[in-house]
Image (cartoon, rainbow, N blue to C red; front, top):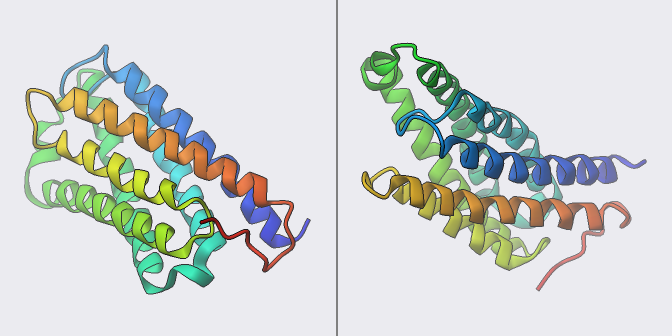
Length: 199
């Protein structure tokens, strides 16, 4: 199997899996602690680990056409999701009853929480814009990636309705990740260096 097909197949599977795990993790968190969710929300942690592979593969599939914006979006998204993985790990500890408030809210860890969230937010927005501009996978998927990310981000500022926004944002993002994954899988049969450009 040519390396481009391997990237598309592996990336397609990673993207679809990340989408499904993201939705399941957030749905499981609905029944837990308002701040930390549930220990079963560890699926969200798994999602972020898998998402790193999905983002790199999605970037590789459209790198020729996404330019500097795509590179910056991918780097910020990967750095952000890596930092968010640490945050989610601490939240899992909080859901199991450990005292984690000081870890998430003060000094350098608190700064990393903020920077991780912002890098992930802005990285996915840039990645969505680059995806729309590249036209290698469906452009609408890039737009919906931005929408899902922004809706989820609004949950950080909407205290009373945070769960609704986060769940809706996760649902949109889940759908997009599965769609992007299926798009890569459907293109894995094309010859190397000849991506199917979507309009």
